[in-house]
Length: 48
Image 1 (cartoon, rainbow, N blue to C red):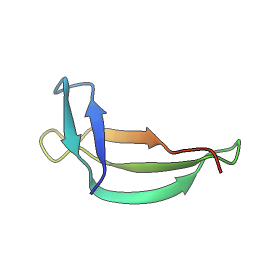
Image 2 (image 1 turned 180 degrees about the horizontal axis):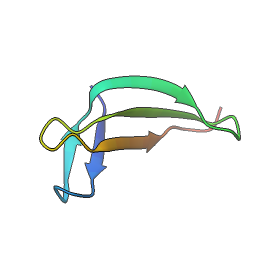
Image 3 (image 1 turned 135 degrees about the vertical axis):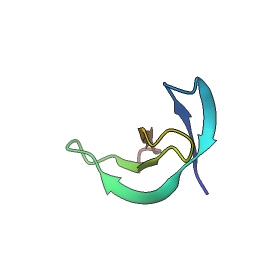
């Protein structure tokens, strides 16, 4: 699973329901939810 920083929990968390998305500029990213508080998490991927 992917990890991302949760701003509300102030810690790195495993993403729940992680989905690969593509940003407007074409870069890949992962979007999911924090398992603790339910906040939306976002992690930008490497440029291809």
